Image 1 (cartoon, rainbow, N blue to C red):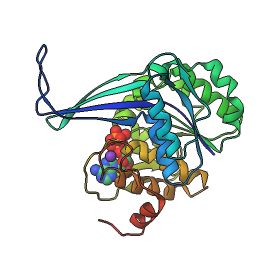
Image 2 (tube, rainbow, N blue to C red):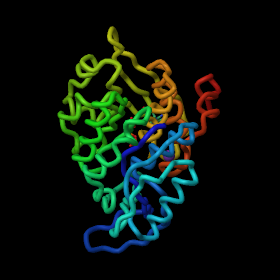
Image 3 (cartoon, rainbow, N blue to C red):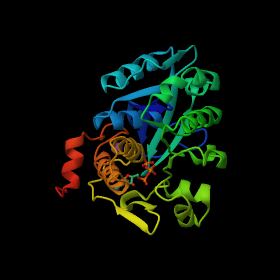
Image 4 (cartoon, rainbow, N blue to C red):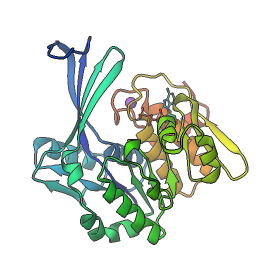
Amino acid sequence: MITVVGSINMDLVVKTDNFPKQGETTLGTLYTTVPGGKGANQAVAAARLGSAVQMIGAVGQDAFGTELLAGLKNEGVLIDQVKRTDGTSGIANILLSEGDNRIIVVPGANHSVTTEEIDALADQLVKSELVIMQLEMPISVVQRTLEICHQNGVPSILNPAPASGFTTEMLPFCTYLTPNETEAEEIFGENWEKALEEFSNRLVVTLGQKGAQFYDGEKHVLVEGFPANVVDTTGAGDTFNGALATALVEEKEFEWAVRFANAAASLSVEKFGAQGGMPERTAVLERMAGDRI
Ligand SMILES: Nc1ncnc2c1ncn2[C@@H]1O[C@H](COP(=O)(O)OP(=O)(O)OP(=O)(O)O)[C@@H](O)[C@H]1O
Ligand SMILES: [K+]
């Protein structure tokens, strides 16, 4: 069982031709709500690939909370340990325009999770084969989860996004760290390639369409990305993490696991929305076998 301790959000997506200026009103061309939150996305990515997944987190008592839980359940993610709080569910207000985006995240229920609650769920963590975290939860909750995993020999993946929440105290406790290039720079500085050598087979930096890079103890390994018909790259990183977790739980060799994650993520960018393009296992294996686009 993979346990994801992380955020569950509703993404409120609005498209418009031009971003409104201060004090201005513009007409939008599309409004849609799609389930998101890095935690939920990574849980769904792993579940679609056939992993048994449970989620630890929180949603509100609002209609979004009900919809988000139903969505996770529908994907086969266990939601028994997701708390419902009095407040609102987390949302991400996503404004798309001019080929760019502007996003406001309101954490809501996600930030109501406490370290005491994590302590009370320690048995759930200890019995997990692997635990995945991101940084959209209270930092104290992430740190406590990492400590419990570390103390009990449970492997963990920390996807340090957004990187502003990262503290170097987390480093000795996580088994794997999966920043993208920008996050790697924020955490380790421009010279992040040196850090790969220090954390061999533990630190993987994702490089967008180029793939991902790690150090195997002797040499740098660039695991090349797969060409894709890009529609929307939202969720690429989340798919990568869910897929990496899936392969690692199955005790696949590290380089193979990264390649599997690249293939899964390359399929995810071919559809709209974070979860929309997350693939099933057969499609990933086909892409790996060379049935490229
Ligand atoms: N254009 C692309 N074509 C093929 N694969 C891609 C592309 N963009 C991303 N990927 C895959 O997704 C992985 C994660 O992408 P990236 O390094 O951009 O992370 P990210 O910034 O967290 O992504 P996002 O924020 O868009 O979810 C890459 O390692 C790669 O495997
Ligand atoms: K996508």
